[in-house]
Figure 1 (cartoon, rainbow, N blue to C red):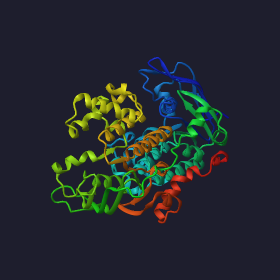
Figure 2: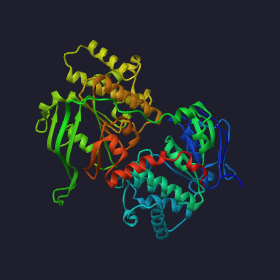
Figure 3: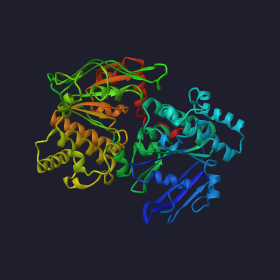
Figure 4: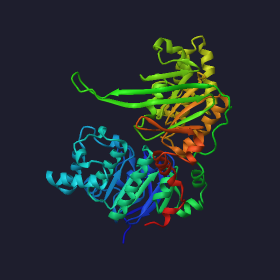
Length: 537
């Protein structure tokens, strides 16, 4: 019997330059194979080649073969590919919000697949759509048929994407980073769902990810990619327990680790708040009924100099809203003190001299850096506002110093954000924050969009900067492994309420509330049993 997917000596070129070379692997029916590696390694390009979805106006396959159940797809016509895409091979993309049509309802988007590939009528398509949504365990599926993508959470949108991919009952499902942007509890739910569907439908799964914890839990076999080549492949047990290639060993050792920086017992408080609450009015229009959302409720927070306070919880729990309120970027009630000075009642003009004392680093460095500005212009923007006495030459020297501080080449000052990798862009964002020598830096999911090895580098950098500059961090993340490596104290939030807080090491070892226990279990279950998936099938 043919494997459901056989890739042999595949090469992919963009405008004549090969980005993937000599890639060969296969997937048997009902098997899960993981394709792992860092960003730019060629994982997604390989997956898109299977579906023939590359931009072929400038992409090509100089050599190689891709066979789906014995049928060659390299060079296949659009008509031939129509019978492969959806019918034989389905795909779940990394970011469902950009993959779903924002103008169509969930019913319309799944129904379109059923019309094209199954020729179902409207009533039959609706019934099948509801069946698929129930299959992927979408809550209140019947009520969600008329919903638009923006009305669903990240986990719900990902379930809809999986339902769309399964609509034509494919033999192979390609999941491209299906859990990267999801909270740990939602991630665990999606992974459990994919595994149940694989077993129930006897469907093969090609899992593309840089998260080795996911691979350890899900895959029977692993292919490790770097620089467009597969450098190692074998069973999960063999790859995780006895890696042969140095790059595989590098990946396995790349997860953030280490201990938080030591702090003085008598370190003064940089920021302290009492009973901070944030409310949003959800009503729209003059005559709409007043609907209030309590986004943050009665939050007491204290951060000392040189300390990292971790804030964890699922999406929508109020983590970022709390941070924005503490920075006085959102209206709130309660008391907030910065270096002992009450700032809650201060207006915009009175707050401006204090803004250099509190800075922020956002989740997506590419989205938070102005693409039309050079590195120098980005970093010196704050200096022009808060250090007006500095000459252009002095500002330039300050930019040079901070680039060295964050581990970047000072010669990169005149380059632009698109010329850097994700990790380098995040270093630029950190440089922009610390060039003003702040007392407090809010870090809002600063590593979630980065590869594991780059995450580890950024965590090491943040600890080094904290040690040298005595910085206080408010560190927001859904990745508890990263938080464990950097946080001294921990706040756990759910539905706008702080449900648990205290010393981080204590909470990680002995969480008290059921919600915190569920978060910890979801986060660390993946690393608990190395190689456990190897014998599953």
